[in-house]
Image (cartoon, rainbow, N blue to C red; front, side):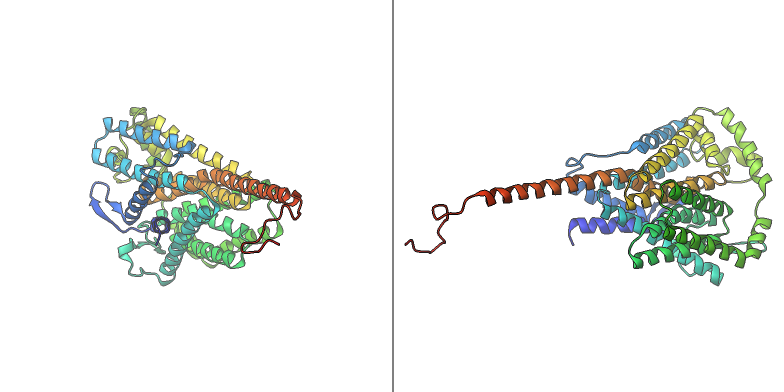
Amino acid sequence: MSLRKLEKFFLGATLFCIPFGTGAVFNAVMSADLVMVTDVFLFCLYAMWIYRTNVLTTITLRFGKIAFYAILMLVWSVLSMTSAIALTATGIGIFFGIKAFLLYFYLVNNIKTKADLIFVANMLVFAMLFQGLLGTLQGVLGRTLGLGFLGERQMLLHKVESRVRGTLAYPNRYGLVLVLILPLAISLAVFAKRSLYKWVLAAASGLAMLGLFFSLSRSSWAGFLLSMMVFTILLFRRGLMKPKFFAAMAMVLVAAAAIAIINWDTIEARFETGSDGRFRTRMIQIAYPIIMANPIFGVGLNNYQWHSFDDFNFWHPVHNEFLRFAAEIGIPGALMFVALLFVFLREAYRNIMIKDPLINAVAIGTFCGVIAFIVCINIGPEYQHYRIKLVFWTLAGLTFALRQVKISELRAKKKKQQMQEQMNKMKMSVDKIPVSESTMLPMPGARRI
């Protein structure tokens, strides 16, 4: 196996294993493994990339505009250590943020062709397909499948059937991973021309939707519904709402409606037993004094719970990602996160305007995935978790590589056209040479008469 093929294998393994909870070096402060199986593959990936490029000296490194805000947030998180109670928790948060950014950095520098682009997108879809299948089986059977080594766990709620988790440990994390990738899978299915590939994408989307339902994650449901509304608007905006696209969207809506109708009792029970608005309102009320007391650098990344537990007896940060960042790394840090999301959406939208079906499909998918993500993080602090970060930054890598993919394709076409023109000129010049006895060369071995 060549080095490039081996590197591609490790890239696929890195992406497919993102949702798995297999890890080592457990830390009790954060109740998390510091090294995940996907980190091992990512390390191998970087080792091969560094070797192939002679320590990155033979290439021009690309960062993308989003990298500025990501690096700035990491620096600001380091500064938040000045007021942190648990320095270990802050250090671990920075460590996870750096690893997630390294995955983005690799992708944005190595997705150069449409083949690279579709490979990365497909690996994300395959990861979602596995999680959707696992969640569907967990929901139908009402039990785990013995995959604890991959992070499989399950939780029961009063009057509600088992909430599935795939291998993400918690239902809301599981649901968020699905809604981050689902719009991409649906978008690829809508734009796909090959019937077999379209059916595979449709099957993956269907299983993911079933898994999403069985997660009983209300925030993920809301995020998915809004993302599909935005998806439809974007198709209209680009003039892409053709009859076959409309039919595909109708199938998605019909499938979602059928799942809801068949399981309406479960949905009602979920809303009856889930925490109501007063719970989250109380958390927000506690967050504001913490923010006002530490407006610049915050109380330290991943340190929120040490400041709220006495008031709330709840060992978890406020269920709103923007307020969490404002409390933990200060108001400037929260504004950096808002700017990061804005730059992400703007880049995806600009790529939607490019006249290229594959680039449109990926850009629409990532744009709608981030819309679903924003809905979810307004209701929960899910971005705090490492595997959510990895999926988010994989989508960012796809998005900020799209323009380079298009440029590379145009350059390749231009080069091919120039070579064809040179060959045509050479052919024309040869055709103009007069053919006579004096200009004809004797064949090797022929006798002169």
